[in-house]
Length: 100
Image 1 (cartoon, one colour):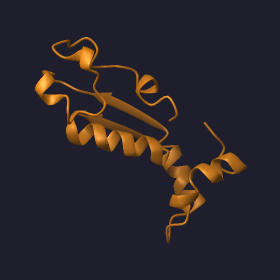
Image 2: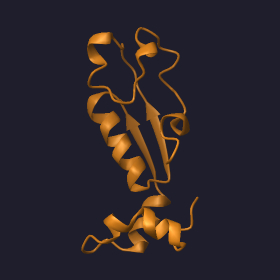
Image 3: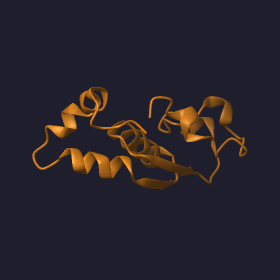
């Protein structure tokens, strides 16, 4: 994990560290946290994206349900090739969030 006290870490999270009451300690706590997102469709997928860019340390993603092409426009983490295919629904988070 990136040390938040380095210049790169401070620069990456600079905007949220400018929020009143949000300190380097809070960012470090977020970086040391794990989140489980159960259901990475429309809402869960968006939440996962924002947690990733906010600097969450670890994330576990699980999704159960049928993927159809008619759902793909709102499921931002899903790939079109996954429609009607269940084995890819537990895709590693580091493949979805390569910069996380």
